[in-house]
Length: 415
Ligand code: GLV
Ligand code: MN
Ligand code: MN
Image (tube, rainbow, N blue to C red):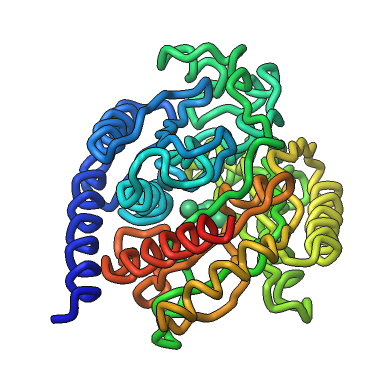
């Protein structure tokens, strides 16, 4: 076996083991469920802290529940590598956390004070936004874009706000942005992540170079009508909240499908009906809407069409509508200079890759608006993600790590 293959093999073995260890920090047996500010999130952080220290990094936590590992370089300028350690409900063992593990492996390769900049490896908290409806909690806090009072508007299914959940976990929400980065001190950001789609897998390519990330808008919607007897209330005397919800859901699908842009997608992922019984007219419905596109104008057209349909159906059914926009992020392009450096490293490593845009959100999305940012994708088997079946080959992560190391070494030599 060639030395290079042996290196990839042992790196892949370690990454696989680390990911298997971390996958045990889950609230469910089925897949991985690691929501922000829970016991399993805290346990995963303790484990990551240990892994970072063993790799030679000094560590600290910030006010948002992110973990940072540092490898000092020849200057205080920072190159940051990271991804998130939270997961969706019954998700996989790779989304987010694999990028943190890869970051640790990149840092492990270097000796202190050899790179021209300090390496900072970050495990971001609450990228997914599934518990409180927001997302990008740590990345936005580190960019200084979150105000403590906002955290009171984000509530979980039990009505507990992110502000309160932080207090219960021993964090002071008033200090969420106290550890914000000085962005002028950062030379670049890299996130390694699974593709979560099937393009690389179908093409049989080990790496994707991300060109841009879709812009997203997320909403919480509350439709309120009136509970009535399902047997005795004539159809024209009802205020049925679910009927309007159905019109809204179908419009979301139609509006996105009709657009020429293939990257535009609309999803209603939550539909909670109250009282939710067979013989009562639905009194209220809680819905969510998630709309994405690389073109912000197309995304906004779809959103407008959905809400026009909702208002019409609400008026016809005598309902009141309350909506809250929980997340708005503009589409971004990745940094040309970092992409060129990564592309060169892959050419020198003789690795074939594909340039592609991301339909999934990533911490790199808010970060790329403020810093030079790049992403490498690793293929997802059958394109599956946000489910327990999610799987990527450890060798592909090892290759992405090798590419990042190669890029950092070339960059150092050029300075
Ligand atoms: C995060 O994975 C998202 O794209 O919703
Ligand atoms: Mn995800
Ligand atoms: Mn992710």
